[in-house]
Image (cartoon, rainbow, N blue to C red; front, side, top):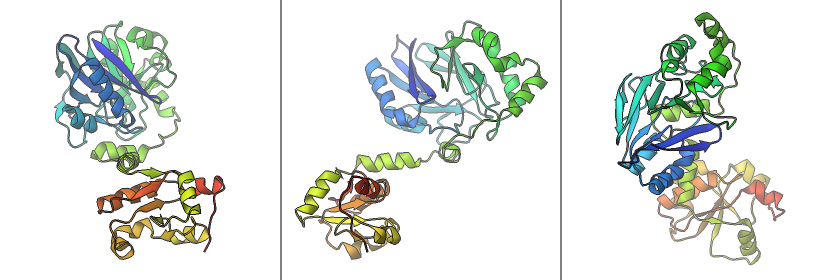
Length: 343
């Protein structure tokens, strides 16, 4: 079996494949690693058939749909998953044919109600049900410590003890373990009586994931995260460095317009020399009035460089094909010691 682990901070995802048929799957893809999955598929010569999420993630943004669209795969999740655009819902015991590999779904609710492990040929991909030296938390939406107890002690841990464990997180970067090693050394698995295990899980005081609300919204709706919107905008917009802009301003070049897209009070407190003002919130409604010439070159800037990237992308969509954005923002401009006007 072909098996490649892909790290994204503490998150772990996997590209697996059948050596004989060159058919593959991606398990728990994360949005910041999309190019990595595509590169691995090409490097390994794999035709990705399935893009699998082991559960509805609350701590990162799934790339299951993006991978499916990019590589012609099917999105796979448990039948209880509420995410739209799932191509293939699986039940407990269903098997996916990844070439000659048999990837079997094991419904393991507890971390979430749709949590599902997938096992094949001495390997199990546990998502957040079982971690190395830990388990998934049960205090997030649809989590249940009683269900997690049943999933672990009644199902997952009954697989062959030599089965290699591949979790959805590996915060310490330790090597993969086996189920037998986890049974023997995982502190949470030492609470083998239901009441003790449930009490332990309920007593855990774990900080909520940084992107909890946004991750759930994105992963449950199949829509986009703010980071995705920014990345997409940045891919269609050219940028101008602060040094280049400073040089052009000093030379009094008049072949472009500098546009401040912050709110008015921010503009009045300090702006780039000669900048015009049009807040991002008014851009679509007033752009024809402010810029009647669609061939003008417009350089957008904001405080940190994010809103201006979105603004420049919007202008390009509206037909201002010479719109660009400052590489940086007003904060970086000030800190670099460049000239600032007020009023």
